[in-house]
Image (cartoon, rainbow, N blue to C red; front, top):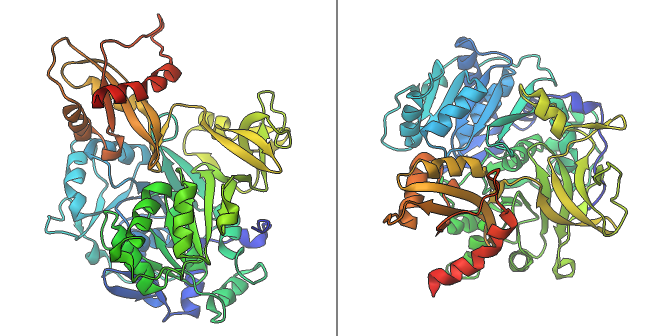
Amino acid sequence: MTEPIPSNHLSRANYATIWESVARAVPDRPAVLADGRTMTYRDLDDAAARLAGALQSHGLRAGSRIAIFMYNRVEYLITVYAAYKIGAIPVNINFRYQGGELAALLRASRADALVHPTSLGQHVRDAAAHVPLPDLVLAVPDDDGPTEPGRPFATALDAEPLDPQPLSPDHQIFMFTGGTTGTPKAVVWTHGNLFDSQLFSIYGSLPVDVPTDLDEVTRIAARTDLPPTVTLPLTPLMHAMALFNVMNTLVLGGSVIFLPSARYDALAAARTIHEQGVTRLIVAGNAVVGPLVDVLDSPEGAGLDVSSLTTVLSSGMAWSDELKLRLIAHAPGSTLVDIFGSSEGGPFAYGVVEGPQDIPCRPRLAPGTVVFDAELREVQDVPGATGVLAYRGAMPLGYDGDPEKTAQSYPTINGVRYVMPGDYVRVLGDGFVELLGRGSGVVNTGGEKVFPGEVESALLEIPDVTDAVVFGSPDPLYGEVVTAYVVTVPGSPLTAAEVQDEVGRRLAGYKKPRKVFFVDALDRSPSGKLSMRALRAQVPDLEAGQHS
């Protein structure tokens, strides 16, 4: 991979301003393909302008927060675009949340509007029992359910389109992350800083000079001699990796494709790559790539050609060498990029595979990344050293409304500001590192972060449960799976399936323990602490006992 593109004064731009300019240059080019329909750049811009007009008529303006509780749909992108047009802030909400979790996010974000599909309407109604809903609620019909509370999304598109407005590069973009505390935290980007951080992702693989003004950005997007960018995000737009790459695609005048279902369908994905000539695929490691290559290796996938893929990007979870080799066998001209970053910023390192010669894949530090030891000395050039990753470059402002946590994750060291989420590595030499994991106990399962204390609280609400501990144990597909040790009252008939069901009634499905072990007691210290290393080490024996 080439060196990242240096920042320039174009980083003072705003995404809505860029997209509006691109739409004027290529109005009839396909922008979004979803649900059997194609929206041109003119269509997308008009829909976003009309929604922006409706938002403004309801009193929303720069700095207003618009919660999006939705899986990947064209309406998600329209809402993001409309928010940008008025300087408002989209708020990403995990569509797997239950009512109580949704309520907590609405409260934390101080949302001024909410957009959701009718299939998630019951969760919205459940949330309304915990927190007042925003005055403006829009429902996208995707089943036969009622739009209440709220009104149909389409009615907002009847508004008069808002003319392009002067927009600031300092307008904000939120990415909510559970982080290591379990409390939702919004990482705050400005449009200018985010665009600056994405320059390599946007232009690094193209035979063009780096644009330095809006006219050059528009001219590049309008060129017909450059390789097309056709992006299929298989991961949700609620995650930064998918959203930012979709945003980048629109900067390039490319096309974005959404699958028709919230549930991941690997066969539908393979067919879409084949039929639409997808060039850029957004995945989440083994959990997404595994089912995809299984389909491609099966009789069902025998006639499907995915060789149009030029780039496959993954971030946030384990992606095994075996699956990389199987995928690249079907797309031999593609580059597989394993990005090691976080919602807080980065990227910190890349693992790049272009063929079998790149296996085993080892992450290499990105320019701008250093490794600090415990004394805050740079040790990225010291083979064998262990330390924490830190990145200096374009980064977020910090966490919304949390200066203390901002100071922790974005420290200034020797006069330089860094982002340091707490990921530890061992230095291998020549820029390569071995990832050791985050210093906290957060469980990263299938790209989703799970805070053990939240799950433990749910477990302790179950009748008969007297003690519990939750942690992550290794898994070849998901990287880690949520694992629970549960202590019950003597003679309790409680089963593992019942424990999982009870947690699922309180929390999102991915937070349910996939492994549940009943134990007589937890060996806590006088202060209540447990040896997590010892607990993890017992998992194989307990699993063997379950199957003996």
